Amino acid sequence: MEDGDLVKRTESDSPRNSINKPRWNKYAVGCTFLASISSILLGYDCGVMSGAVIFIKDNLKIDDTKVEIVTGIINLYALIGSAAAGRMSDWIGRRYTIIFAALIFFVGALIMGLAPNYAVLMLGRFIAGIGVGFGLMIAPVYTTELSPASSRGSLTSLPEVFINFGVLLGYISNFAFAGLPEYLGWRLMLGCGAIPPIFLALGALVMPESPRWLVMQGRLGEAKRVLLRTSNSKEEADSRLADIKEAAGIPKDCTDDLVVVPKRSHGEDVWKELLIRPSPAIRRVLIAALGIHFFQQASGIDAVVYYSPRIFEKAGITKKTDRLGATVAVGCSKMFCVLIATFLLDKIGRRPLLLTSTAGMVLSLVLLASGLTIIDHNPEKKIIWAIAVCIATVLTFVGSFSMGLGPIAWVYSSEIFPLRLRAQGASMGVAVNRVMSGLIGMTFISMYKAMTIGGTFFMFAGIVSLAWIFFYTFLPETRGKSLEELETFFEKPQLRSGKKEEGNFGQIQNENGVVASNGHDQL
Image 1 (cartoon, rainbow, N blue to C red):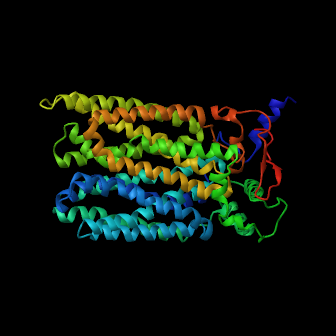
Image 2 (cartoon, rainbow, N blue to C red):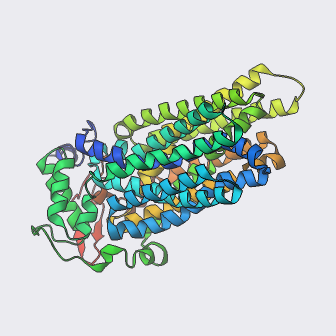
């Protein structure tokens, strides 16, 4: 038999590599669905602030600088939550971290809804921001660790689906409460954000713990029971458990329900391995994860989400209710396209979606910038076709983003880190994501005043063009690989092109310094 035939047969027979026909485990889908509700917290806040800030500005008599701050500051506050969530999730587990995130955001949303002045509103933004940081970090990690490889991309994209659903709910809330008295409308818009955390906390009570976290605590019996319920067969569950034990430095032949694991399982020395003495493979993983999060937000997506009413106003839509109605269309476009991505991630892979999405974003941004520039240069004329182009390209921009770069940033960054580094690595990705989102949110008005709104979107088009080059040259395809296989996937420079390489992907060194075969000499 030829070596190539053996490779093909081994690959197709492996329970971890059934990528041609993704099978959805109903229990895993239900658990990831519940966990992903935490992402509604960020989505709702992004969507609702775009409209609420119009009424906050008039009611509290604040200037554009304070508008920028109150809009974007929650993303910087989220840094505290994401930094704490990595260590906390290693300490108390993924499930209880989700409950903690819900509790914090619930308190923050109530304070914002009851805020009598700008100072109390900022206090609510601070508390809610910490909850957002916790939720953004823990939802992708939990869903990645719970999902089988055959459907991991689709299931791990669910947090992005719920972010978009939250954005849509926020836009609908703006439109629904816009007719109320000024002092009441924006408070109801923000206060309604306390509803999703209630469902999240209740749902988390019936969710299982992450099997990979259980193994890292030495609770092999519990991990096996979870894997049996979230896998498509007993063989797949056994295979996943064997890989997780190997990655955790536990012998594959160990059948005890409880074992002693190194203290490092609780997060010790992880930062040193990530930042101070990373191996070439870990350095490449870190650059890939931080890079995709950087470009996701540097694309200007949150400028459109937060300030779409202003963008539509610049495009020539003057009536307030019309602008808020147009933002609902933005939310619908995002929601529809992210659902498409959810069903395609495990069928055609991450790279094709990511590159197509980014190219669509570049084209949309160039056309949007051109339309806004034409309108800006003809202030006394109402150029209908230019207005139509601006509205259409806003919709295609957010749609292109949601079909690829939006969900894939979370899927990719949460699946490529080794098990021992996953929580902290994911929290670093969230940190970069939120810093960029905060900077864009807190400077967008100042930027378009300084360089015109058309010039600002031309700048975003240039940044997304660079992102396409980065994704094409640096990010390999990860579809169908188990999380443990991905631990060695970045060791080969050739893989940056996304092409498969026949032969051994190398060996892995576990936490105890023991060199072991990765169990998949050929892919």
